Structures are given as structure tokens and as C-alpha cells.
Length: 317
Figure 1 (tube, rainbow, N blue to C red):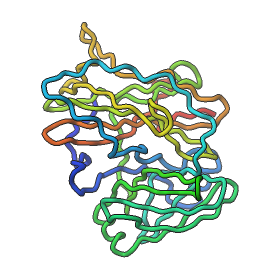
Figure 2 (cartoon, rainbow, N blue to C red):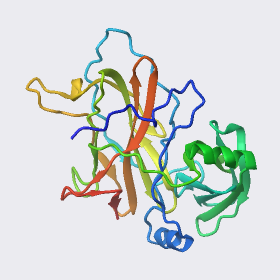
Figure 3 (cartoon, rainbow, N blue to C red):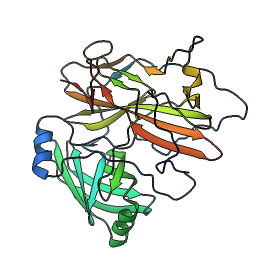
């Protein structure tokens, strides 16, 4: 099963000032329902964009040079504890009129600031929050002009800074004015228990394009715990991941075909989750397509249960 073809409105030329239609999950609308979800330990929403979204691009390919087959992802452990300040319970942030609410996993009081380059330069809204029982809700207000622009865009890449002093963190977010469809690759995925109950594997989508193009792929594992919120693990460690280059064609990535023609797609394994950590995880892939102009997109993968059924998250109680 191949991925959807990449020529869509969600692809952007990063040299232009356009909105990246980063999609949202259909999060629980009612506050009471969201609190009930959080109480069970399950995520309130999806993690949003990966931490380096639309940045740290790879070097453009040399014309006429065919990339070799890239290495598989290295062994990795999902850390049970992460430092560096507060985290987000959802990386999808809905503005209701001018009001923006951030749901935060925290260990102390702090401040929050939201920005979105497609709307305006600098900070769009800021405020403070009070942490109680490892939870906080920051209520921020956009200017009328910023709210109107976000309404026009519907959804765009934003960033949020959280915390206080040295315990300040920054995250990429999907900032939206109304619900949009969740961006998801149609094949590949996070296999929840490939090497055992607490050992998942990420299998890359078989990216298909017309016409053929050199592509660069950056994989991520977003993981969630009650105390930390969403955090990001890449093939180079926390908040860092490597680009893997290949050649995409109408039938998939050339480098992932064996001499006999069988598909042997890129994988990242083994990944180990500490038992008893009550962790949730989802896979994400960013892709750069090298056409006449560079095109960029990111999407979630499905999570694949042992029975072959699909689910939003892999769960590790």
C-alpha cells in the first residue's frame, strides 16, 4: 500500500510566506471530557509538529548523483525521565476567537509565549500560569489582527515557549482557528510490540511520487507520559533526528527494493520503552521532495497493534 502522492496544498515552498496546513487531531471539545481523558493518563491530543519542523533542512542533492541505500535507524531507548522544563499535553492548539489555551505538564509556575511566523513577526500572545498537581492551563489572548489572520489561514505552524529561567522549553505547535484533518501517511507505521511487549519498531512509508525525485526523510517518535506531556525522540537523541536520503518513484523508494524486487523499507529498531512507565507513543515522518523547488511535509504514522489493527497511539502501561 503506497502513500498518497505529495502534490497537495499542504506542501510549501519555505522561501514563501505561506501557511503550512498542519493538521490537528479531533481533540475532545468539552473541557470536562478533556479532564477525564487526562485523568486516565492517556494523551489529551496529538503531539503536533516535530520540534525541528520546517528547519534544519538537509543539503540539496548533487544533480545526477543517486543516493546509496541509507542505514536503518539505530537502537534507542525512550527515556523514563526528561529534564528541560515543562511539556505540552497537546501540540494542537485551538484559538477560540482571540483566546488561546495551552494545556501544560509542569513542576512549577512559569510563563508562556506563542508565535507564528506566517501570522506576524515576534510574539503573538503571552501570559503566566500556575502549576498545581503537575498541571497548568495558560490563558493567552491574540490581538484582533492576529486572530483574523489565523482565521484566514485556518491552521499554521507556531511555536510556544514555556517555563521560567533555566527551565524554559520551546515546542512547535499546530495553531488553528478550527478543526482540520489529521495528517497521516497511508502506510508504514509504528509497530507497537515488534520485538516484545515494550519494544516497538518504526517502519517508513513507501513514499511514492510522480515524477521521480530525490527525497530526504527525517523520522521521529513522539512519546507521552502524564508528568512530562509530549516529548520527542529522534535517531540522534532527544529533540534531534537525522535525514535519510533516497529516490522516490511512482512505485516507491528505489533504495528499498531488493535485487529480486521485494520491498525492504527503512526501519528504526529496536526501540525500548521502560515497563511500567505508562507511556504513549506515535511515529512521525518529515519529508523534503527535491523538485524544481523544494517541497516539505510532515505527517503522523498509524500505530499498528499485534493483531494488525490500527490505533492512534501505541500504549505501554
